[in-house]
Length: 446
Image 1: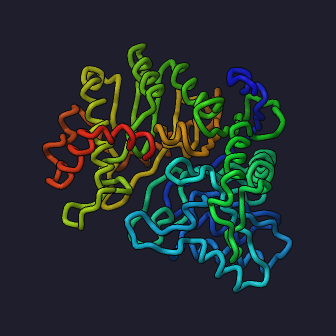
Image 2: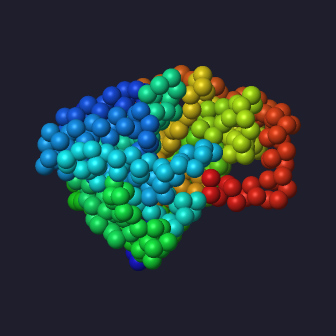
Image 3: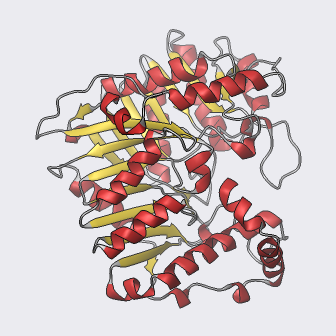
């Protein structure tokens, strides 16, 4: 296998016109744009997400795709979701058939069916899922960390805030479709969840093992285009597992090469050791580091104290403990302005932003949470944007101004609650977790 240091030389680069790059500022505008693009598609619709939920927003998206298919049967429509996630209910909910039942019901209702491929990255969901991102409609890539359900698409009162980018470029769209077709859906481990008869995960074990090995060697295809001073360069990256992972390596390199400024977004403060090390090194060499993270109450696992207790509700507190420890260790840098920690919170909404912006030149759009799970278990991807002439600076500044509308900058670690401030049931749970060292395992897989 090719060493990682030589791998970047073989990756494609696409020259994108700045006016073909757009930033959407809200979950609602993302939903509206996605639905409109699906309705007006003329050649292809490729939707890839962790899940497409059996709720109002999920059904709205699936209905739009089916109606487009009935109008134009020649449309190439493919949907990919995680195999395991599609066949279970929500965490903490009663046992259910999962979203696969909806896919099968839709296929029976319409003349022209749409395949919904379940991609099993590992034999068990806890050890790896499909976390690949990107919706490709005709020659446009709509890139977001969002999955497809009510809260991600702001269908009702609440929303889960993410980042939403639109890139109109045929070669980039072809590259991403090529990966889906050639590295995922053609593999025997990947099956159409819209069919009534499905193989068991146990029966697929050998195929799943081969799929993961294959994905570990896979990369996006395409040419290395010449990028003029009037354009920006976009390189798609993909990775699964720690070894020979171009995406992990690029994140590390971006942090190590930063000269002036780093902006790091992550919904769960649980950085891999190598990322934490590079962030600390950057601060020490005088790089201004901004970390934008969700408040514990903006975590998608947060359960208000007046609601019935569930163990999964301890996770946001565990992440806050990580953040408090990091802030305390870097208190002097917070005081000097070398480190800025911004907590996002807006009413009862949740936060799901990811990505890196380095020296206002390199931007990594990604679904990668920059945590140990993303680093070692899940199939992740990202779009690296190199913009030396800062053609996109105004658009990214507007995006971050929008993000900061609902953030509070932490002046001291003491502003973050400690374990003694938590509800009694959370305290007991976390003390038990720490005493048994289960927190080490949880930080690796959640």
